[in-house]
Length: 59
Image (cartoon, rainbow, N blue to C red; front, top):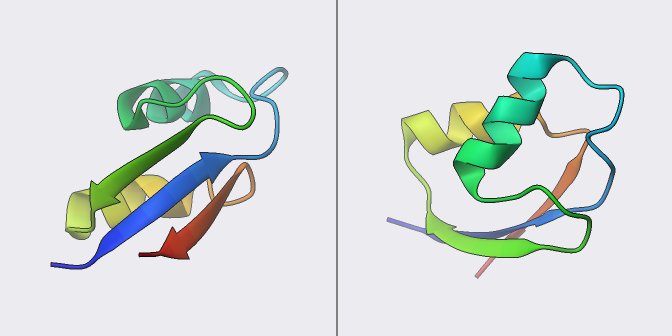
């Protein structure tokens, strides 16, 4: 599977609770925090849900 780096670039303040929980489940929560994760359908869906708050780069 491919790995991606997901970096939070926008704040979660004022966002719906489900988006806040999605960021937490991804291991994000502060601006500029990054994770490297293998992409699968579940992770892909989570990224799609908060794609306006994060930046995704292939590794």
